[in-house]
Every structure is written in C-alpha cells, then in structure tokens.
Length: 116
Image 1 (cartoon, helix red, strand yellow):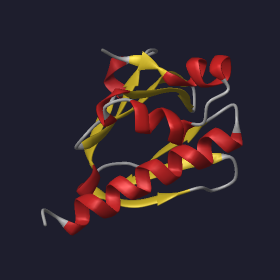
Image 2 (cartoon, one colour):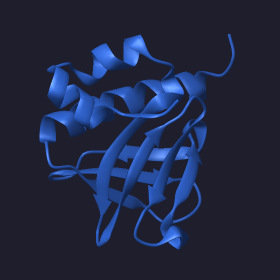
Image 3 (tube, one colour):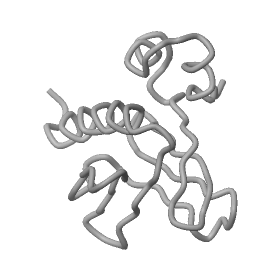
C-alpha cells in the first residue's frame, strides 16, 4: 500500500523520520518538482525513483549504489547518478527536503557497504 506521507505528516504533525519508522521503507512517497516537471519522488527498498506526472519520458529509477552524488544546492535536492543526467528536485519546504536528504543518504551508505 502506498501512502503520500507529505500530506499525512502535515496533517498529523509527524516528522518524516517518525513515519519512516512506522511503515515499510518502500512506501515513502513525496511530491516534488524537477524544473517544469511535477511528480513523485519515491524512496523504495533498493532504489530511488522519480515518477513524472507531467511527462513519463522524464521518469527515472536509480539504485542507491548507483548514485554518485547526493547534495543540497540552494533549495534543491540533487541526484547525480554514475550514468545519465543529474536531477534537481525542488520542495515547498526546506525542512522536509533536509529530512529526505538524510533518509536517502542513509540508504546510499547502506547500499555502498553491501550485505554484511
């Protein structure tokens, strides 16, 4: 079951971290913009996905281990994969962007470390 946590977090007054601890990791979905594209940024178990609702040709999936750079320039969240173009996501709330950055960065580190 997929939930849009941005709306739930605002309505319930919960943090993204609190929500992440209550549901499977693959269920985290956030409203974002990528330039003129609007869509959903999804934190799945093994990958990060952007589903463009404006033009499906702009949708992308990245394995966490294939993300070369994750950064926060200005008010954006930047994903630069090992192959392909970078994506700069814009959020309405910079605190939410920072929390999502932390969640994604933890998953990238875990993926790069491999199975224990």
